[in-house]
Image (tube, rainbow, N blue to C red; front, side, top):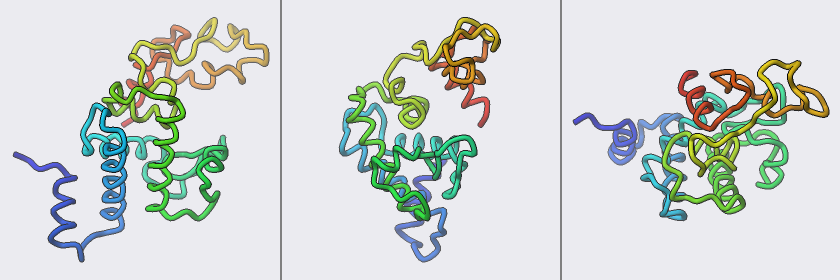
Length: 197
């Protein structure tokens, strides 16, 4: 049976710790955070290894694991694209945060979202559920068919938002509307993420 990359990493850390790379230390830090989260929220419908994998997928989607990642269109930055207000809530510095320290803030952020949004942890059981804690936590523990955003029509001139289509949550995220029905569901967000892997 083929061993998972995580098991191989843990074996390497135990028997050959002197050969660990910066990437290895990062992954070990993420696994430590996953174990802490599973311990704090035992009802999460996944193992600590699942939480590790879901977190790694979130980092890949948000920043491609780049510790200095910055969104050119917003204040979001770092490996989990923390907004300015989020960094303020976490007492997180706005610049020069080492990668391993970012993982600690990410763990703190997940706790803040689960507790603050009163998420049903027993419903968190997929990489999409976990990613949405970062992207749009209100959808994390909902069914795949729940609507994230909608509008009167797919085309911009159909939008009736009082401040115009540029202020419309649907049109700001229109790339997720895969079937162009002027409605974005949680399932479509997941399909979009998988398509872009």
